Length: 240
Image (cartoon, rainbow, N blue to C red; front, side):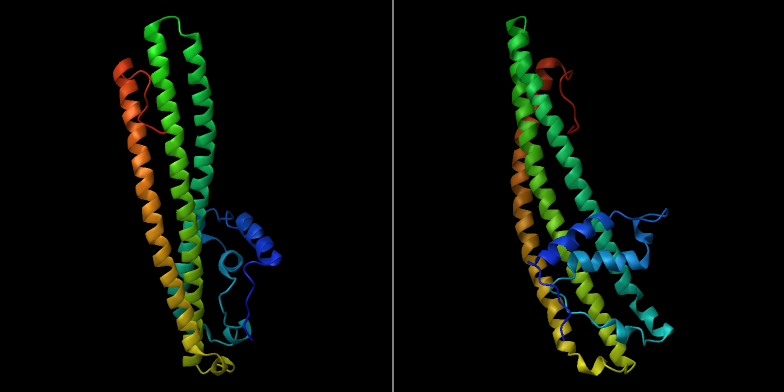
């Protein structure tokens, strides 16, 4: 019997919400040292839908020395969870930056109307152009961030699939009761299919990134024009 959660079901949506909360749970030593139970819970809630699993009843029968063979795959799973954390944090950081960029654009527009002379008005107009271009760049970068988040979720799914494959391989080598009923080809196939989907998504992400680079170049051009006019007093090298 396949142990699957329908990805489009209300249950899957609820589990993903819980996973989003749990994925930020870390130990004092950092994300890589989060509890083993928390690690697997996060991985299953985020990436578990659609991944066939080896029943826990089989893994519980493995001798301790055999479980050591699973450490590499388990470590890859932990890395994938941490990567997903990083991408989600970046999405939130850029969201905050977009909010501040909107405030900056509003302030720049206000300066145009309150300029005391033509020189000040010209600078204010350049500031509006720069602020508007900055906002476009941040929005483009957010699209890149969302692509990276999507890739991180897929990578976690693939890591989980590989982990399940490793568990089955180990269980069958030790001739654990129940493992003979599971088809290794099916576990290998789900890893291969996941890797293929990831590769296709990565190509799509490259295109989004290239488009974002073009938007960034336009912002940098407007930033340079403002800096030249104000002797660098109105332009920061950082995206605020």
